[in-house]
Length: 225
Image (cartoon, rainbow, N blue to C red; front, side, top):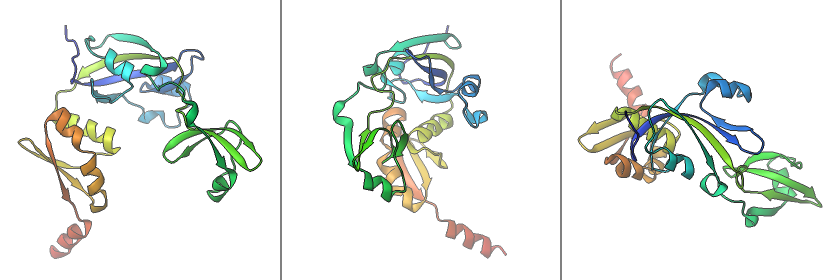
């Protein structure tokens, strides 16, 4: 019997459900994605994560250790082990004119992306907007139904999984011993360097960056003509 261990990379299928309403809020399962009306469910697929390295919510991350490959599991998580308790200080009053300047007309109950956060409009009155900056799932008990499909052993899959999680993209790379060189655009170099620490902590690689110039490639093409 193959059981999962901390720091293992695994391919994971899951569906997250709000306990009280039975509403699916996240899934990697195409059938469940179709049920909740995901626009392009063909792109829904299992995720690859490293156990114990905060690549999913705390409670699920902790529950993934010691699990059998291919077996279905379910775990119920209190809010503090999922998306956190609701924080009253995260509810703020904002002038309506700030929304209007962004060509947004807020309405009660509206959810929108503001400063890379999903916020909810509680009320609009007298030129002021009451906005809830808490995660929409904060304070809720959630259930994850999941299955560990396989352990991931290929180092390139592991590197790409970390890239997807931390960079939201996959860059070309080269491996030389314990050196990992990521090929980056110049304007992304600082960001990639700041976010590269997990590659050393989780995989033991020292991350370097190499700026790839499109102009250089263009010149190369011209020289071959």
